Image (tube, rainbow, N blue to C red; front, side, top):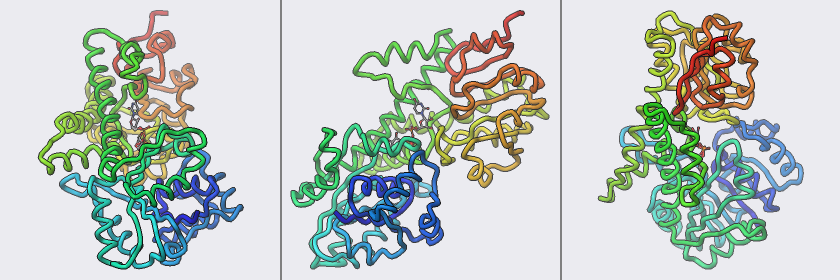
Length: 441
Ligand code: UDX
């Protein structure tokens, strides 16, 4: 099958590479010439484990190509994916659909023969209908179907999520289009992946409902964590105790500094707007959005109180800046609220992140950037873990202590155990667990 992927961002590039791995001929299209030129030289525009090899293998097998030429790509393809960005519109939180509609118009102009147009971008309910209208108005003669096929890819494990998904959702009632989608996802049918065939609207809503549910689950455990601190309970035990109930499930019950990334913040805001406009507000999700924003500020306050309540002149070492590990993505990362709040409170911040610093340097001012973790620590008044990269999980605690001015760690991801830290001579603050001081030697 011949596939054109319009938009070679995170979702487009991963999906395109994976479809080519399935054996299809895929062309990834993007307007950004430098991105396409880079891809021709094997340079990935994003950091995603396994992606470079996957791209290289499929380019070599001549199943995967990159171009800026949308017209020819669309003309030569059976299935066209729209995988362009849908950022939050300034002001009202609605998803900005201008890129999606512009792509629909360009696709319509170029289509040749029966074509399946698939929206992969996360788009509000009703967008598929609008895309269909645009194509129909531009090309009243064209034979086509518009399908919704949302992605559920987590950054850092996107390839695995694509190759072995929990489910695939396909929104269309057209049997002809369904058949094309079956062929496209054939390797997943073979491993008995559940495939949900549904209407376009339901499919569009499934994506938002899934992400907002997960955001709510994280926010729930974050609030329970705060309560644990007040009543001397341990949030991990609580999470385990409830998560073992099959109706609740153990995943996404890890407390932290608040969710971030390219999806949850944007999708929660967008669904809140859609729901309000539809006259059926989602009060739970409205609260989730508000609590998550407040939480990031509270994390800065927590750090300031760990250095004695006044950060003026204090040196704070920060490990991890990306919104989660194994990505270079800084979008809506809690660090973007926490670090500026520390600096505004008079602290000097030294920071290190294994992959995120290139991006972070454009987004954070006044930070002293370090080459590796221990470089952040000399004479620091506190060490803060914002992102749980594996390399921060086994720090040489003796070395850390000897470098720092005072042995204070604020672990916003609960990477360490309170008893271990106490025995190692630290004042240790984490989330949803008792804060501990050094045990008397
Ligand atoms: C998410 C969805 O998981 C994916 O299905 C969707 O299509 C895109 O959005 P992603 O943003 O890559 O994926 O990251 P994810 O692993 O879901 O984490 C999102 C945020 O939640 C991160 O900031 C993470 O640190 C936080 N999180 C996650 C927690 O704080 N606790 C948890 O238990 C899980």
